[in-house]
Length: 228
Image 1 (cartoon, rainbow, N blue to C red):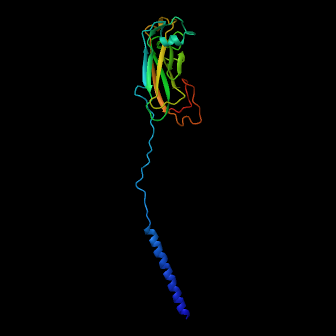
Image 2: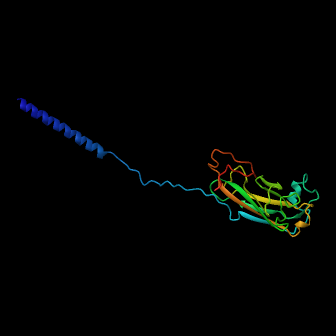
Image 3: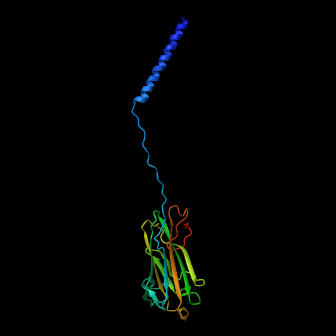
């Protein structure tokens, strides 16, 4: 009697397991389902920092006589000039640069002066009687107004002069103008002397640069920005 009960109980348990298995199979395959299609790959692209090919300009000043000056020098230095009888008889030099990079960037200017004659110093010799420069641009920066350089053996230079504290975006244009003046005090030693000014504009990314520093004033050398 006891043995039959155990067999019947076992058969009932097996039947129940079989019903659950059938129900589960019906639920899994009887519902609608879907899978995602091919995904679009994520693309990572680096920005660019670039300038137009004409990022270097040369300005050669020759055949000047004492008293010669550009119109820009006369307009800027009406008072406080080395001489007051300036004449606008010379043509200013200009360098136009267009920023073409995709990443915003700071622009910097390097100036280099070389000369011949006048004891090897050229027209520019870092004295009040030698050639004077007024260098400025459309961004509002002034890089030189009078005698900012120190000539050593006919050469003088300045590096990393900041164009603007506002970064340049793609298509930004900056035009640098060089006005100049040869004072009436220039004596015979300046005859046949020449001076050549080379301007080079370079760019560096502005994002994350400088880190923890501050941007210097326009037209002033900056050590905060890391130029690459």
